[in-house]
Image (tube, rainbow, N blue to C red; front, side):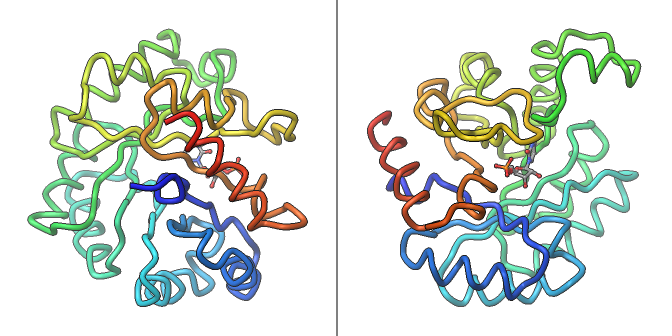
Length: 231
Ligand code: C5P
């Protein structure tokens, strides 16, 4: 796997046309794309299909969270999109439903969202969760492993502990990545690309530092070079 294969570019854009502009400008520097809520209901599904035809890898960041049976049916339908990664929240029933819905699809990997990288301990406490954040991430990673999911979405700050406990049983996909000096935006648990790889992240998700850059391809290449140097 090359460094560019490990860089997932989040297409958090207001219209498919904007996403296509970024995709065009990235060319071969964009290998793996994440489609989430913002494009989902305005053409993101068709865009995913087009990206698949163009040989790109696709991360469907749908973050399903419902009763197990509904998640199972939702994931079964999502399998038809031909994606590579699909997210669900890390609760035992949700994960069991997702793994059952994926069935024997050889391509789609189920990723469990542990704790959003925009949350810190204070924000968690406000929601009534008093478990230390690092422990909660590990607990949710354990749910993922027990259910037979393929990986987790977690901040690089927790990646080392997840790798130590689960080894290669769980792929670690890490958002909240910012090259040194970049704007943190609303992310709280940020790390640099090199630090994320050193911590054990298998894939990095980067949105705004690439899609808002004056030259997205140059920004992607810079991050890929940092991944390469860290590998
Ligand atoms: O622009 P930025 O690099 O912060 O984008 C990160 C992307 O990763 C966003 O699309 C966000 O929804 C997603 N994400 C995240 N934290 C998670 C899961 C997904 O930031 N735990």
